[in-house]
Length: 141
Length: 331
Ligand code: SF4
Ligand code: SF4
Image 1 (tube, rainbow over the protein chains, first blue to last red):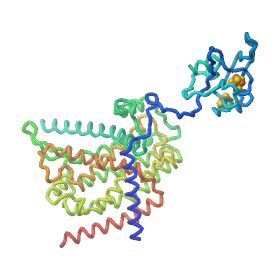
Image 2: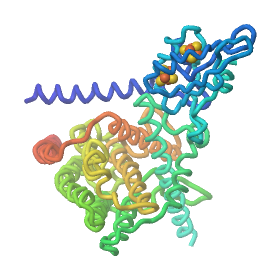
Image 3: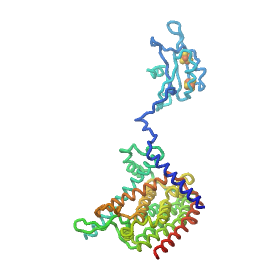
Image 4: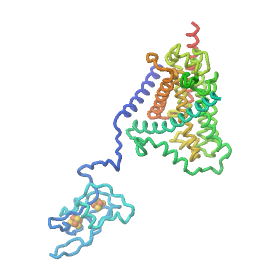
């Protein structure tokens, strides 16, 4: 009985010491808009469509990314360019539905689509969440 | 005439100080709780969130005052006023300093020096529980009712040890007047050493009296949502909030007065009479901090555990404390 009481009181004191220890350690909170967390190197953020040296998109509109995408959010319309090459006339990703799995990046034979580290993707209107080709290219710049 | 003026000034100063410290105790609580949980607490409004209490006050003031249709209107409106006025009135007898001289007038640093100060405080704090019970009953809500009932049951189990634990102090000081008790401590040394058991019991009961964790059964967020004040909004809710924090400060003040020498500083530091309120404030701050610290650390008691603890542990202990004090004093 007495032993139990002493043990109980000791446990209470240990509890108090834990909270006071945390009181004097630095909080983990980040003041978000002012301080931003640096993403890890392999962080999967919004997509980028890359350009080649001549400033043309690398994408050859093979639609592998659109096929592999589990969320089916990539819409590509292929077209023929001046030198009879295939290129995407429109390339759209609906960020609202994308699950950032990165399969599109893995599937791409031309390394034309990659993922950036930007994670601030909120928009005021739902339509703005659908990124077109220009926007996807611009993200990379 | 001049005396009356001085009394009025004292009342105004004390109440403004009390209300300000209530406001900033809420800030302190959120800050301390935050840091103890590795968070920052409020830090947006003003430097370090120092203007947060004002922002909260303005927000609560402009909230809609929702009144439950099925509530018992009179009691429903009365309850917050009972609880807040009883909590604030207790400050009247707390001495926060010795006499000081201002413009040749001898001024006692307390609002009223009644010779039954302690009884007055116990009477008012027991009345405060009516506020909780009535609020719970009148809002016609099952959670509120449960909170009110719990508060009533909690009161019977802690008020007895609360009163009994002070008897040791009364025996040593031979007075019920709080300023006499402090003066007795100037002569005999602070009472928390000879009355250590009494102090512990009183402190535990004081936490229960303020409905603070680990004894916050009447409002138990996890089970009763908010307990007795669930149906109150706007300023009425703010009054409950104020009452809780005011009673934390008052209970700290009472602990300091009864066991830690009130306005007396440590005996090895000599300081003129105007130091009294400063020592008093520092000590009250320390105890208010401990109240918050307890809240950050301990989980809530279960209902039956509280009753068992009150009746089977605190009550016998306080009686033994009285007996031992009596025997020691007889020798
Ligand atoms: S990251 Fe995944 S879900 Fe998003 S577009 Fe690429 S394949 Fe589709
Ligand atoms: S897989 Fe690569 S090259 Fe093929 S359509 Fe997608 S982005 Fe273009």
